[in-house]
Image (cartoon, rainbow, N blue to C red; front, side, top):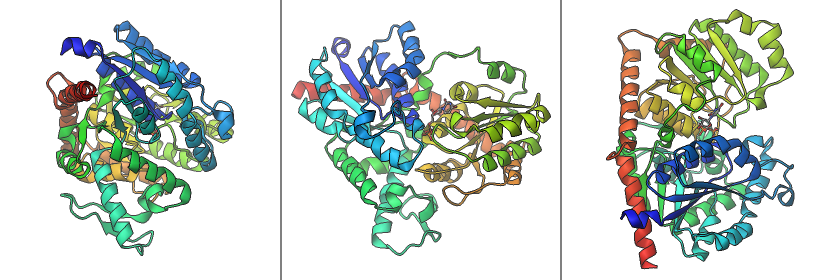
Length: 472
Ligand code: UDP
């Protein structure tokens, strides 16, 4: 098999969003370590952003190349430079962004035609259904890369059916997801727009995704078997296809690449498991009023913290409040505010981190699981309410901040109470939550190590690619 693997060439195509590029790049490292040649499609601005990851891979002598394709901003009516979903400022731009992705089809076909060696398979984001046609054209198998859990995949399927059968469910009325082993309730207003409102724009894309799923060779899920065994098995039965959990891919990061970052030195000076890390991912937009409440809650809680304020949320008002109104001065020594992009995986894996206040994006959720820390869940949009329910009711390693629907406002006092509950060092529920989280962190690491379930699943994927190509 070794010689067969040496010749294999995998083509990876992420949706240009942090929550797809980061895990697919991590996955690229995992498969390249098995001796596979990997080509990762990106765009000029994204290539510049992720250069350091590839440089790390080069140091390890991994055979990964990034191929940059021009992103057709102008043709799709996007402002120049909108090459990543985190640069989009309005819902109209989201539609144009997906159009720009579709316009990549012809140039991608040209590129594949010229690629040497010819790719043996394509692994692309679920949100890029048109890549299925490209794979078909070149007679190579396509595997879908899922950036959500099997719990969410299965529950979404069941909920779509519930909504079809009972169109009358009002936005605030809660309903039970039946036929699963946990008591999971939703309201319609907690569901992603794509399920809640079958608007023409969304419906088109959702239908295409479903169709492409039907013809794909298989699916890869960034999750691991022991995290959600029942949901993995049930979802497999539902799709009746090759479905392999191959994560958590963030554990592919062997070395701390930014260990010089000042926050790591700051964390070194803190007590073990004492710091709460606060970050809301790459896409959420948080108003000044809401940021202020978060700050007041952190200040009142008396626990040390690292709080990330992303570029899209920075404003004159918040800067004034942080500096001139002396928030940063008041929490000096106990709290660290980081503006912009933070090395999240590195921070979470530091032994001083004791809790994670998260917006429940799936990557952040898994990264919290890998770090073995309990979480405060504050879902904001998309499938984040599914992840909250998974963290709190299935894994039982989380405390809810208490939002009932997308965009729900949270007072500073709620933030303070949730932190105190989560960081409680007593012998009761808080301790059990922490123990469960630690155990899951260990299980996550085992799954990716040689002989672990995700490691073996990657071997199955490689075997499948060999098999399909030998039949072609
Ligand atoms: N992330 C990071 N630094 C930041 C913010 C986010 O490294 O300052 C990473 C985070 O570790 C995760 C990804 O960005 O891998 C965000 O993905 P997620 O699915 O959690 O949320 P989304 O950004 O899609 O809402």
